[in-house]
Length: 582
Image 1 (cartoon, rainbow, N blue to C red):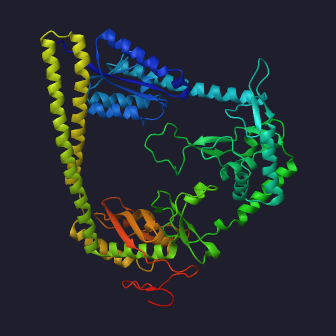
Image 2: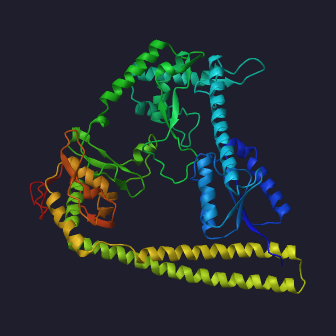
């Protein structure tokens, strides 16, 4: 058989609208036509549907770059350079990476740069493409501003209480009042302004009256939805546009590697920069102002705003998978970590029935066990043995996986030989042989990649740098001196840096984290208060040699209702005082 160039194809569209219009399929068709014309053989197809070219973190592109290093193909066929990335610097980065791996980059619209002059022209073209993209974005923005100033409503979903009448000929789209929903809106404002109901009481009343929101998987109202609704001036006839702009979240709740939209958070603009659009009003301004004032009063008087000291705040979880949050009934006399499931399920019945955990007990026991662990070399050595044992078990498991994968490769090769022999006997044509053999070869390459990844993980396990005895002894000695008699802020700072998560039930705690044991201990301090007082040693924030640890702590049985725990906690004995008895 004649050898042909093995290539991969890559296609990308940037919006959901392009996905719906099957633009990605159009690109694929053009790429396949080029493959037939040139006589290439497609090894694998990569695509990113609905991903912006302004980011490199795309699943299809990442897989392409990974497979390129494994030499799965000889070249990559792309429709246009802007399909790789919108920014010229990103295009150069990807192309240089592929060329270093020995992979040729082929474009359909232009020829890939072969010398310095071509590279300069390609760069100029890329800069113009980036400029054109910015120009188009600005035109869209100015067009929207012009429409808003003319009284057009730019909405994807009509506001609750209204219906949107689309544009007809020369009449732009407008709102009309939906009387059924408008009555609900009037009652909401009246409940808050006249009866002084809190948002949670409003949710409960809506549930009792069986009033459903327009869109909700659970069929119940959310307090955040009601808070936004009760502060929206559109209900007094003043709809607005351009009140916020998209930004990258500083503390994102979604920690996934791939995100189509980086700017998933919004920041409010000053109110004088908003664009106002007159619409029919549902309530009077006086009712709106009274409801807004009552919301501020409710927030100021909310008991949940009372601040208490929770050492494990944002670090402790329930076994059901939800986070536990601190709660201090009776003005902080009793502090508990309670599962957030009851809050997330409100006003429905909670699905998790785990009881609360006394926060003073949990905080004290976790801190004492952490101090004992980091101050005792023998305990640190036990954690090292545990970690090495887990790694050893994992390595033994991967060895079995490699053997099974190699057996599957042998079976697949036997199948490929059968097709080759059948072709030699004249059973089918060379085109049919391609159709039969190419998927088998792809499967073999994929299995070889899995083996290489497993071998790489094994080598990382075997060559992991662990702290030596001298480093452990020095770390324990300094920790013993530093970790006693710290204030709450210092303890909290250390917990945030050392503990990853705590999973707890009323009877047991499991603490997961990493002990920071650097090669050279730095006894300088980080300051975390306005007086710049020394609070936390720097070596507790290092990432040089973080040693994973796992602590299992048994909790004492709960006392009778209304009886609180007390502690007298010497450095080593840790005596627990309950009802005046040891």
